[in-house]
Length: 158
Length: 158
Image (cartoon, rainbow over all chains, first blue to last red; front, side, top):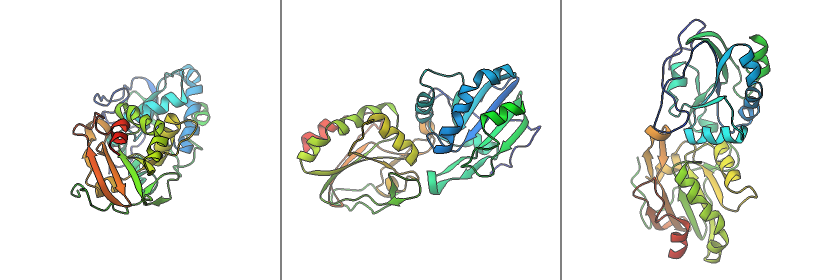
């Protein structure tokens, strides 16, 4: 397990998937971006947390954010179905499938969710990047809650 | 990896999940039942194959089938969302979450789907049980296809 990434460090260029199961590339990180790690697609807290980012996309853009990436350790079919469920008319928010947890583990932000979900999953965190460097990182102490990682809290901090 | 289960073999009483992430119990197997293994919720072939079992549930019952279990290596939040997507008005067909792949592996019916889906997954198979014994087992040679494991083919064989 990698040590947890700190402010000032570089986001590893670990490939992930967004649109197809056999094409993976690293996240595009230029300027200011937000990476939101969530334990699982369709799980209660994630299902409640993510809409805030979809609804506030333009507000985030107005504060200089380029891309918002929702990252979960799920396969790409599940993340696409989840995005369609939360944003039936589409969204500029990217739903990222870290299907083998490699990206999440490279940040040191995974936890063992075997009892509930069957394997390693992402902690609930928000990273604000400046290019590919971590500008700020907030990790929920309890991954099943969304307090510091709610969209409204992150927006207010920008 | 367990050897692949054969006709006459006993389905291991390995716990799986259906409704909640923290309650795992073995499948209830009395009389005639059908277990349909699929590689992944929301994936193309599975998404096309499973409706046949939902639509033909009464026909299966008329042929003496008690329960139909759709089993995939996904967490219970994903399988519940998938069932809701395929059967918005509900269905007596069970969607089973083998989230850590233990049940699938106990049957020797797992394969390494890491490149496309991120980890171990179920082959595409259909088992007809007599109680907890395997009466017939059909495994698709290509998990990306559903030919012998289509509901119509299985129904015709009963």
